[in-house]
Length: 128
Image (cartoon, rainbow, N blue to C red; front, side):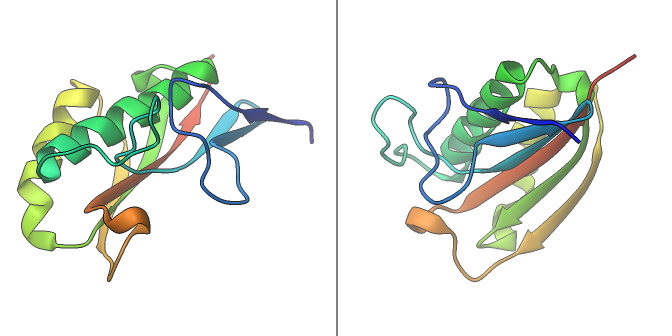
């Protein structure tokens, strides 16, 4: 099985020993994205909604670099530090995906890297 490492300057560089994404056999596995500004590497300022907006921008930039659009996403996982943020993150997530509705899980976690409130990963499959 051949695979391709996906890297784009339009999303934050990995902050550990992993890739932004890996594509293999038409499927792209995106690492979790957090609310880092790709230009500065700093956490974006603002509430969980602002963080979720940056997370989705980062995630979609990685998918685009792999040759995928929103409609190729088949599965996402949302990690939240506070389930009280579910509605706000859900609204941002839905807005970023439009009418597309991939399978999804949302889980509460004790903490996330850099002290952020939300992280989202994705799996996308090439159409055709």
